[in-house]
Amino acid sequence: MEVMGRSIDVSLECSGAPSMVRLGMLATKRGGTMLLTGHGPKDMNLPMASAAIREVTIKGSFRYRNCFPLALALVSTGRVQLKQLITHRFPFDKTLDAFNIAFKGEGIKVIINVNEAD
Image 1 (cartoon, rainbow, N blue to C red):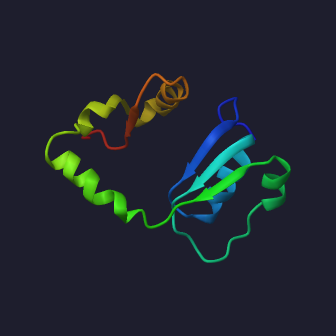
Image 2 (image 1 turned 180 degrees about the vertical axis):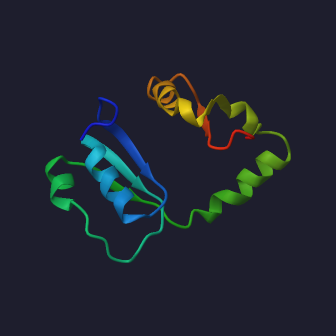
Image 3 (image 1 turned 120 degrees about the vertical axis):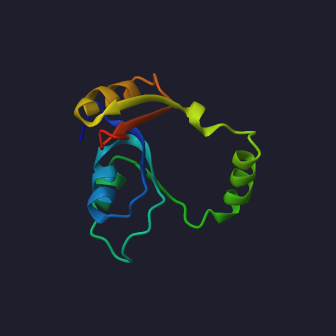
């Protein structure tokens, strides 16, 4: 499966929604990696044969709470400036442009504003 004309090297699924986990597995390229951080239902109907045939590596991560104290300390003391990571903002009607910037690697954090007031 291709997304915007190319396969995905690494997919990151954070919602846990079965339909999105399935899409991530199918969109990840042969030999690619899928990272699962979302917490979905206990059992899911997933295309495991497709992932195995394409040698997709599937990694899970859950309860990464040990990272939060350091992250909060870095942000609260000003040692890390999160706003500097936002390199591009697009209105919702320019979503395709936002994805093109992200795919080209021209941005760090690309934001799509759904509400005009954002």
